[in-house]
Amino acid sequence: MSDSHQILKPATWHEDAQGVPFSPEYGDVYHGQAGALLQARHVFLQGNGLPGRWRGRAAFTIAETGFGLGHNFLAAWRAWLDDPGRSGRLHYLAFEAHPFAARDLLRAWRRLPDDCQGLARELAGRWPDLLPGVHRLELQGGRVTLTLLFGDIRRLARQAQARVDAFFLDGFAPRVNPDMWSPAVFGQLRRLAVAGATAATWCAAGQVRRDLRDAGFLVEKAPGIAGKRDMTVAVLRPGLGAEPPGPERRRVAVVGGGLAGAGIAQALAVRGHEVEVWDPQCALDVDPSMRRRGAAALVPALSPDDDTRSRLSRVGLARARARWLDLDEAARPQACGALVCAQSDDQAGLQRQALARLGFPESWVRWLDPAQAGRQAGVGVPWGGLWFPEALRVCPGELIATLLGLPGVIRRPVAIGSLAPADGGGWLLQDAGGGELGRADQVVLANALHARTLLSGVMPIGHLPVLSGLAPLAGQVSLYPAEASSVPRCVLSGRGYCLPPRNGWGVAGSTYRPDADEAVVDEEGHRDILARVRGWVEARDIPWLGGSGVAGWAGWRAATRDHLPLIGAVPDKAGLWLACAYGSRGLSWSALAGDLIGAWLDGEPVPVERELARRIGVR
Image (tube, rainbow, N blue to C red):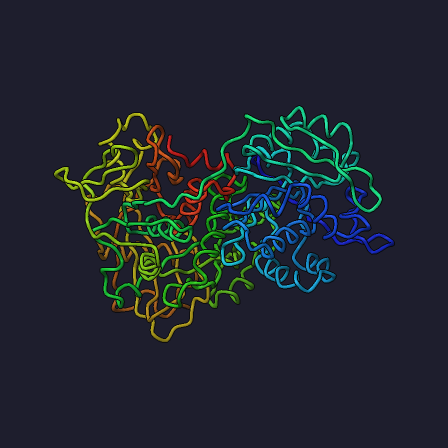
């Protein structure tokens, strides 16, 4: 098991004799007798000078050290909505070691006033599965974001990335939960703080005040609430903290109009940036009837030790669902789920052992025996498998075309020959002869293997060793007419894959040809795919598989040696980014990469842990 993995222990609902929610784990209540909202308004909003401090700001970020039942977040959200001078966006980052399930949160929120009930329902509807790590929720049409970090704050405080304006310090009392109030945690909060950041807490313990001072805050007492004489307020010492992110609207050039470029374009356009996608060929140029043929699956990885790829793929699926499930029908992924089929009795045993070790909730993944798997898929599955109910079947051509046609995205059907720094900052985009095609404040290279070629014109590639291992992989998929078939009912994944038919076509795949000179569709590839799939599924139950009229698609993948993507800023080249090397997981990384780069550009809470960002960074 990797050192970073933690099996979450969700909170369970308990009340004390007065009906106040109570934690038997810590022997403490979630809020005082005065009520959660009154405490939130007096201690955390007033104690941090809110709503006044967010007025006129493009964005404002709050961090809370114990999300609990979410009353402080709901109070902040309500106050933000009620303020005509509110910031353009509100970001809220919250740690929680023992999160509640949505049903228990709704139970706690039944006593909220009417003006908070709609907010509570919206939050409950987007509440994530109780999995360790970072979860980003977008509310209020994306103007409010809630970034939840589920797990031990001692580790996750080091993993958080944000620029925080105000801290709500609201863990259980230091005597029962000392880890929440430790100098190490306060030091990490100081790392996250921007200049002028404030903090407030109901806690007035002398040691807490001293540790806050040692972390770099100027600390004072303030009047408490409901019979509590004192509370604590603080402000970061002058000269400390990064500058808050500005309201800058940038002109961004995205080089590459495939899955990588389309994911970047969507994420930056919804943040208000001016996006130009440069690519002489993309899905917009393909006949719609051809675009609708293709299909691919977005299935999370699962490893026994919860490795980097597994953790990133969970976030990747969550970001894809958040970004794509509200698109128009043609581009909207099919939320059909996926069955990762065991290939033998031994592998079935290993899958069950992995689930037992990881402790993930069944709402995210569960084991299905052969009979259960057969009923779920509608076809025979000899050894059963892992069922992922949130996995997606996607039509990449329709998805890319829709994302590139969103408001704020301009398509430039021109090849970029080279890049050069522009006088005064930013970048020149040039043709093959060095002529100027355009200018941009930021450039994102999302053009697979060709990113290395463009980079070589502005820096020695030897400075980025990971690019030396970037290799091309040819691959083919098979497309079969499947007019009347309804099987399989879900994505089937194993040694190869088989997808539910849609738009009259069923898809099976795929081949991997690392030493190919060209990417082509051929009979050998069709035979290879059939042999792969028939080894672990009752293929006779899928009437279209192996039938006549087979067509195909072939293309190239770019992959690194560790099969992780490259997403991040190019070192020492301000305004230049990479989003490439997606390998066979283009769908897993597309929306995630867009939100990572968008968060870094705009100073938002970042939707992955720092260690994961480092592992996929440009190095």
